[in-house]
Amino acid sequence: YSVTIDYGLKISEMIDAGRYDWQNDDINERNFPVKSKGVIETKLVLVHLNKMASTAEVEAELERWGLRATTLEELLAFGASYPDEVQREFPVLALGSSWVDPAGRRYVPCLRRFGSERRLFLEWDSCHWRVHCRFLAVRK
Image: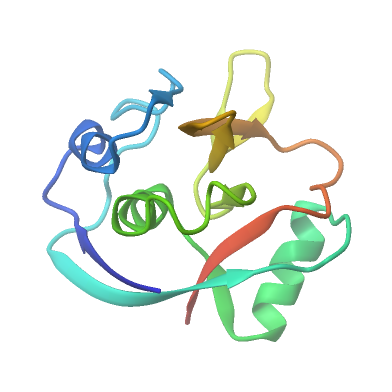
C-alpha cells in the first residue's frame, strides 16, 4: 500500500483527512506528538499472523521479516488513502505508537469498523491480539 505522510500536519489534521465516523479523544497532539518532519512517500505492508499473538510475538515476526511496526502517522495516512478497502474487513493496528493512560494501561492506535462506521480506536495492549487482527508495517 503506497502512502504519502505529511509530518507538517497536526494529528488532528491527519485524523480529519481520514474522515472517520468516530475517533477516540485521547488520540491527540498531547498524547501522540508528531516527531518527524517533511513529506515522505512509503509503502506499507499489512501483516496477518493468523493466530493469537502477544505484542512481543508480533514484533519478533516483523523483525524476522525485516519490517517494523508503523506509527500513528503512518496508520492515519493509510486510513486516509484506503478508507474502504481494509478497515471495514478487520482491525488494523499500529504497534509502533502507544499511549499509557493514568492507570498505567498501554493502548495502541487501531482502525476498525463498528457496524457501517469507520472508527479510529485505541486498543488496549492486553495479553494477546486476536486472530482476525492485522498489523500495519513498513520495511526497515
